[in-house]
Length: 566
Image (cartoon, rainbow, N blue to C red; front, top):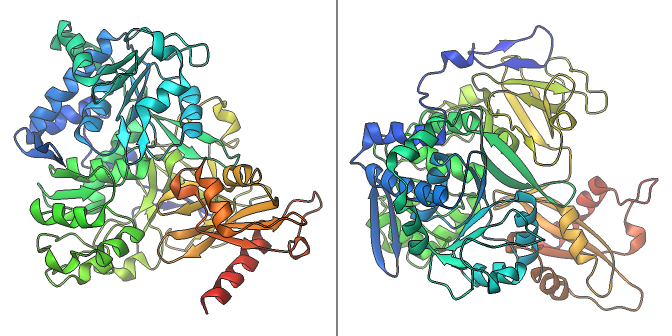
């Protein structure tokens, strides 16, 4: 079997096809990407949002107009080329106009998780150095307007657009989607009105000076140090992946797509937005995942494709209205998904699951598209994408291993990040410009990549990266806890289960409920351990530097959980 890759003889170095041979790629700035979409699909419905106020629908032309309005307001607020604009929103129409509008104004879209606690938001605001923050005031039980006002006391006494804070010296404007009584926080509509003095020609001029090589996005991902890593990506890398989604997913033009997965994470952004718009489809938006509501939306909006994680599939199947809805429009659902077993669904489609990537490469660096035969995929994670080079190295020496040998996956290519904020790029790459991913795997003789898991300790649960160091730093403060070590245990539903392994201080009494309740005060919900296991100190193997051995503890924890479920 022959693939369009180049394998260096005898070595685990595989290159994808030349980038200039890749088909289906348009403009490589986000503003240019949107303009291409409008030119091709102007009157197609692009997005729909259901709320308590009714239903709002945007065509591609209207999405452009709304984005231009945001760009005008940003320019009137002093945003210039390279200015970071914080976007703290769920999946809603304004997220789209805020992101595209930031690009048209020359700014850097800086997305922030709506799972953030106050402590996490403080870190994001400080590390991002955003000058404007556009936020959704209320998400579930969180009041972000109040949270930001408490973090930035100067808001209470300031006037709109004039915030001056020593703790957040770059922050000048905070804008809320709703009317607000929090001092200097501006309301969305009043803020948009400030942009009326800016002409469309001026927006066009700013957008025209944005280059594909310019920084366009700042996403945050959990790091092994426990602190969120700010990952800066150029427009070119992001847009390449958005265009590629049309090829990866093989959706029909105009397919209606649903997702409630936050676009503030790169994978959700790429597949939710790119998978929909690059095919001229319509994005059916849901702010937060509520399974019964999601099924109703799929039926009402005749959804043809859903971007969901496996743990959400299970919740959809368990929803009260599962058998009451008509999902016959759901043509693009993987036959292995439990959702495909719904009595109204008749699908033969297979998803683009043979793939590998990370936030540092703005999602995938290797893939096979949807519909690739099982014998071609052969249990692999695809072949390198156009312009990418992947090699397997010895984790200790960094030397390339022989073809077929196991080692650490190292990557470079056109979607590789510009760097982590605050860290020189040469400190993140090896001497040959490769990103050492910390993941283990190997190539087969045909150049297919097989990913075998992480060599580091990052936990991937429900599609999110979680740092055990961050969790342990919190749980260590819980009264009665002497030692804490968090590990990820394989789980069919979530990918990995966050499990806290605890040694209790002498004479103390600590329960699983105590640990979870304490963690919830500081950590986002998906970081709170799903299971808490208690061990005697002598049960934990340690290194020469007295650190608990993660690999041995994972085995012990997995055995304990298996015994509990027996």
